[in-house]
Amino acid sequence: MLRRLPLIGTLIGLGLAVWLVATNDLAAVATAFGRIGFAGFAGVTLVRILVILLCGLAWARILDGLPPPAGPACLILRFVREGINVLLPVASVGGDVLGARLLTFWGVAGSLAAASVLADLLFQVGTLALFASLGAGLLSRVQGAEAAALASWTLRTLAVAGLVVAAFFALQRIGIVRVIEDRLTALVRRFVRETEARPEPPRRIQGALDTIWAPSRRGHLAQSFVLHALAWLLGTAEVAVVLACIGVDHVGLADILVIEALSQAIKAAAFPVPSGLGVQEGGLVLVCGLFGIDAGTALALSLARRVPDVVLGLPALLVWQNLEARRAGVRPATPSCDNP
Image 1: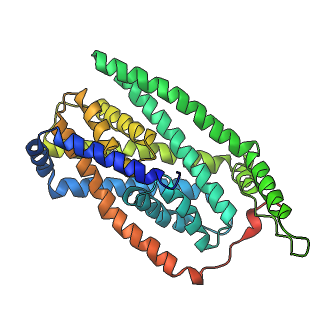
Image 2: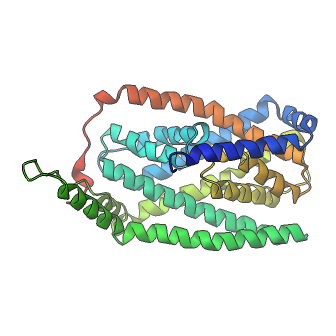
Image 3: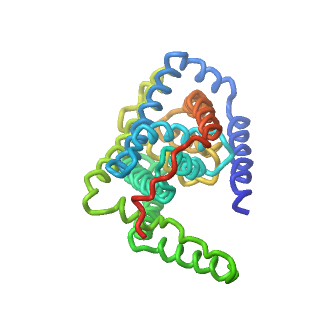
């Protein structure tokens, strides 16, 4: 069932996308999309590059000071993670799992690579929750029953999300991963015959998490958190560029921030749907409508934001395949960051 979940999500998202296009004026969508032009698409792509670089730097700060140096690898693999998540039929965390594996190609221990991605995802989700809270707070000041209802629903959802984020952090800090690893090791040994060699204990992810969350590394972690927050804020520039090219001039910076924050929150809530297919479009139609932006323009905005997915995602997938083809020549993992 878990293996089929991304496929089910893809079919649901595709159906939603087709329904949105079929129930709206295709001519209006095409007209709005055509107004963006090459300069608009180039601007959106440039903003996306900067956003991904910020996220790559945030990941690198988590590993900074831990051998071996992995800063350049994090920048490269952050594009790969993004490309896998937006172009392949996997849940929105599939690229992150593969990113951890690919990081071992630079000599990083597998447990440390996995732990760094877990911490990176925690900061990414946590800053998104704060960003969405800011958007919901600004939306609550907008007149209208629909805006008030959406703001109230968002705040209630974020309260639940906050508990999930807190639980995710607690699981990394209280050693529950170590308990799971001990149970798995005991289970394996139970089924090994006495005449066979006993398996070596696995390199502990919990030990790597303890290393990452060490009190002496709080400065690095704080920098990673801030970089993720800046990445979410910079994403509003994508919306601003597209709307300016289309000719929408009646929305202000605060309105654009609300559009970006809530549409990203809606997309993240539907993480089993690969690339938020259909969900992103529906979220933008819903939120943009609160500010007098018609559905055709909202769909054109969504399509424009998928241009960087393809322009940057395809080269990222090629980089991934090239790394896989050369994996025989990678250095052995460095186990020094793992606790016994």
